[in-house]
Image 1 (cartoon, rainbow, N blue to C red):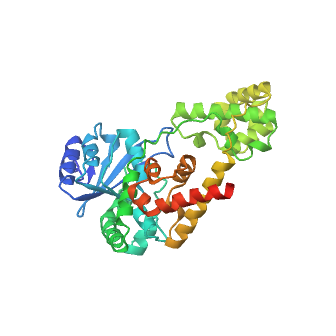
Image 2: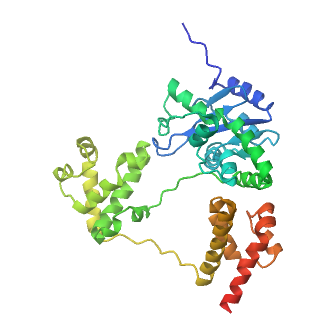
Image 3: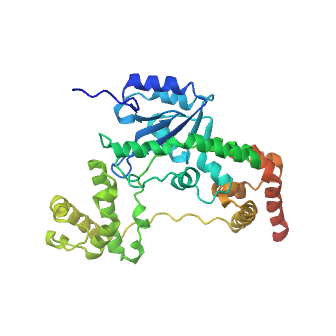
Length: 381
């Protein structure tokens, strides 16, 4: 006997169209995503959770070739999209489907603006709704099919309470006078670009312990690092599932010359030695022949004047955040501090020309920012 399809699992074009027809009639909907970054070389969105006030849905992105109906919803200004910590979700949805979001409410951003001490979703669900969420599936393989009943229940919890949470936060933002600030921050989140992971061939210099190696060992590490990346790409696995950094380091230190030597390297089992042993030995041989690894170009140190501006702005931001009882980047982000330090605006017009500094922040902090930068002139004089 064939099982009837679950109405809450959206895995056919017809079901997706029925869902989006329903969603377009809602003033707001809650959204979240699940990806598979721990299990593949190139991460992809595997599931999109959607909640209305009466129903939770799971959109199986792996079963659908065309998600443009959801893309139209993302771009619809008349429907507010409610996320918790939306930035990474939006980056992934833009990368995989070129979704462009407008009219956003981010419950994490709202909680931070209000100075809530704990802003993780699990903590908020516990304190606000007396709901306990298991962390068991945080590292689950969301690309596996079929999804278990437990995974389905877990996924739905990520959006089920976002709409009532949004109502509580909206009311508190309005009462505290921070609603305009919040919506400016939400709009900033929608401007994020796609999340694209790019391989850094010099990334082995960031491995903890690399600077304790000899030049020849560093050259071996480089060859092993490049091999691991190529193997990860070919086998569609994240690099750490090919070999851990600690194993690369030990191979570089030991400089094995025979297959038998590989069995003494922690992190290498017999299967790995059988499969890749000769390739690893060739990496060691190439590294020894190179003698030393090329150093990446050093980043130019910012000028003392620029560092002084940044330091003064950071001190001002810290004091402002302390007064409000929020973390510092609620006031202004670190990237914006650098942009301000580099631009060194002198007038409100110059301040307005800095991309990403919205009207609310200019109105609230603009005069203070200009005073901080102007105050440095006297100190240098």
